[in-house]
Length: 286
Image (spheres, rainbow, N blue to C red):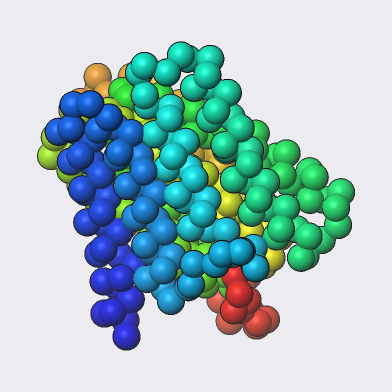
């Protein structure tokens, strides 16, 4: 069973991520747009690989995950099109980001909390997602290290979610780590292939959704969610500042060091709230 899960949630998304990177690099017209969509498909595949059914209409908060992934892939595709005016691209991306986050988080909080908290979380999730994705998108255009950083961020998110008793969300985050890891593997072999910010739209938005669901439907500390969001933003900011020009371990440290510290702190906060052997029920829904 574990081998089957590893193949369905890890290997297949990783292969789809690698294909997305290859298409983005080799297809001259619209390659980046197709690549962004394929990463969304890879994340949706990880969701299905864990035994979750695609819901239509959506009946649960967690059921929004594949639709957010696919919708975010479309957002990344739109943002990558060069013939679309910049103003139109920004507006469409803004609307899509807000809609996919609102769809998932509003339903989640409606099941678990008050409408006031829902409004705050929806607004906050939209701002966090836009800020993080914008920085990661620009950073990925500068250095492939940013894509590696997002894969590690997904891994850290999985750890924080699992430690908080949110197994299903953690498994999807692991699948996302595989999908982005497939992109990262090829980007390390061919750094010039990595310069497609569309690849990171789906991971950015789905991560924000998973953090929101972890806080509202399970016991992920809000401090962990905020630290993970800060980690993603810092990775993008470091990429924008062109540490890619610094070679060797120093370049890696400049790009990923601050984000790694923040991600480790997020896991530490989750462990502080939920120490191993501390008791309590794991949330089977996540």
